[in-house]
Image 1 (tube, helix red, strand yellow):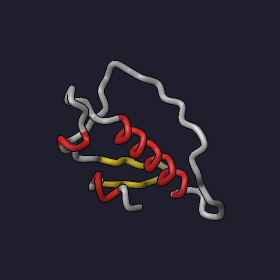
Image 2 (cartoon, helix red, strand yellow):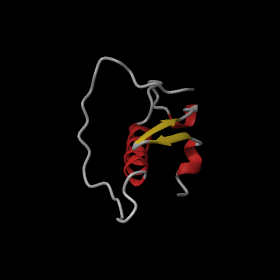
Image 3 (cartoon, helix red, strand yellow):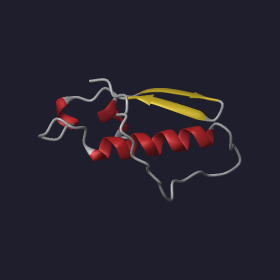
Image 4 (tube, one colour):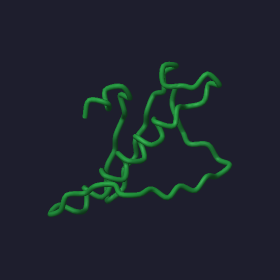
Length: 79
């Protein structure tokens, strides 16, 4: 996927779980210094699809909907 080259992610997929570590350069940050929403959405989508593809081999997997629960604990991003 061409947009993945913008993120340079580290990816680990195992037992139906996916972990994606993304270095976040200044170009992907908002003026406030926060990570742009597009980064969160891209990583969540990729992690979901990779995790499901690790256990479902005979079907095409697509993302239809995300349910996000916000917590007080920040996501771990490497910058």
